[in-house]
Image (tube, rainbow, N blue to C red; front, side, top):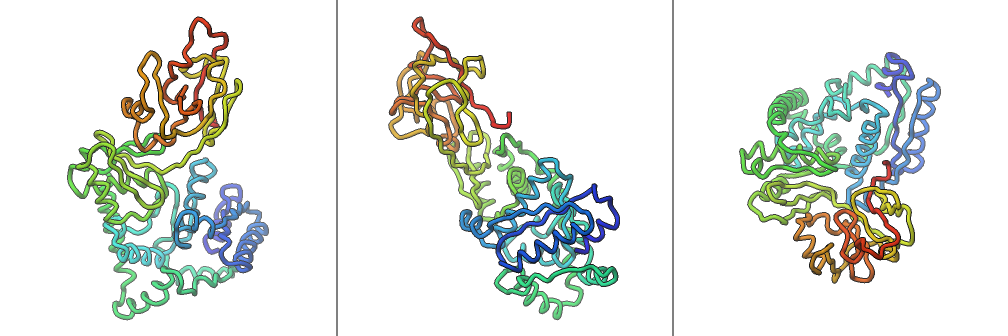
Length: 403
């Protein structure tokens, strides 16, 4: 509330808006906190956007703890706001004691040098202007300006890891080591300088269509650069996940593995060796269903299969032969005869064209029983080629829904 008050005092109301995430974790108290923020904003003419989230279900589906799930979902929401251009940054009220706790939690979890850095002042999504402001300074500002606030009772619960650190461990550390907070913050600042230096030398990867490609040569180079590149590559495709040294070592070890080797990572991430690259990707289970019964668009989830009389894409086929094909994922026993080619199993065909193993279960298949008539991302089968008997031509392609 101190940060919001400061914004109200120093910026025009049309220059910012408030985001509050209701996690649905604390029943009536959570709803009270949501409504408190809404009423405060309303009374000051500030736009407030509420995100109603079912965090228990989100955590159960993703296998997260409540702390992890709430943090991940919040970051997803914040990332969407910035990526969609609704805001340049999401500003949070993390303060100096939060930074101290974050550094210690990273140490206890086995983090590397990046963990010692703690939270960034500006990570191009979140801006944390109060990282050097103490809790005592914030409380004094609230008192001096008579700012209303409500207490979150979960902050007193020792069921959460951060609360145990705050309520049990930090008082003992401060008692044993005077000035511990300042010393930890100085360590964080030095670590940030080292991280910035390493980051400048650890950007030797590319991001394409939500996947990162790290040259194997980078993983074969200096260990510290390889490890930092892996961390930056993960950050390039997802909100921050809890990679530990075991996961980083497993990714680096792909340099000694054959093409096709893979590593499972936390939070639905995988790493694969593909030729001269290690590829980091999100696991995406895509299921297709439907049947070609005419010209038009067919729903593929994020994409559309377009079957058109007009020339779109590069694949052209006999529409009457294509009609009746099932739209589905690949199945055991599928066969595919290439245009003017030989008949073979679909798996062998995908190996021949070097289709990455990580995407094979997400390839769109148009088939009748186990005979594949077309692979819209690749080519048509000989069975639907244009010939002297063709009466109706179809062009098939896959496009993104937002195109």
